[in-house]
Length: 407
Image (cartoon, rainbow, N blue to C red):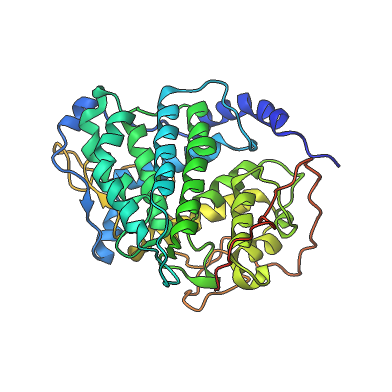
């Protein structure tokens, strides 16, 4: 069986997706430039206790961020990589240029020859340059019309690439970049239309992801708050959501296909799996037990996608140690603004109860007994073969193999 080309799949799903999104998801609210001028505070760290975390989950900004992620997810269903947009927007091109500029700094600031296993001190130099130049970068990104937005989005950009003090990177930093894109969409720098939302995932977020991988490899960043073998991934989560969304409505590629290597770089899920295999060694089921459990126990990509959303709420947004460094306030209202309540009146996607373990076949020692999003399999699922896509992921380079990180 031959897998349909990325171009034919993308063309087939385009019109269908736009109709589906309009019917299923409400529009993302708009914050006008006049509204920005009336905001009373700038973003700062707010979450210092579990009660602060519980309060954040009741706010309109929390519900709208989940809506934003849902819209991004729906926009890529049925679309493969590489993806070429039908039209290029100025905002998207400027965002890609900003990320390219950050990438070029890595060449300007090579790692120091130090004996540390994790955390090359040159990363602090890279971070200091970002802190010094962030304002100028955002001025280049945003037109003068959006100048009042800069102090409200700058804190999210600064947190998006890791901690320059601890020299680590994790899902909290990734979430900060998601909130950065969310804020720019609230003020309509990015437009919440299907084509542009798809571009945010398949071009902008993909470029960000590759930049972060390069930062981690160059400066040997430590995983922030990793659960080790019990976690989904040491550093990222959103690629698995968006990647499973890309695969959700097709049946030719089974979930168990991730157990076959190498995987073609046709979606963010496969690319993230190959990334893990590039930086870890040993049996996949030992160093990535959560992902292995999904591959062997979950029957279809629809359940993978919905389960990962719940897991993201529980294990990323629902963990104080992950989100405590994310700035809130301003565009992401924390207190009452203009005398209006910021609590969500009708959250379209209610938060799930904190289920530490979404996939039941591998229970983490820190997990608490809760209802699972998926029924436990009664027998091991047979691995099905991945249809030939006509292209292969090059995988780790055999000419210059990257030193693999011990667990």
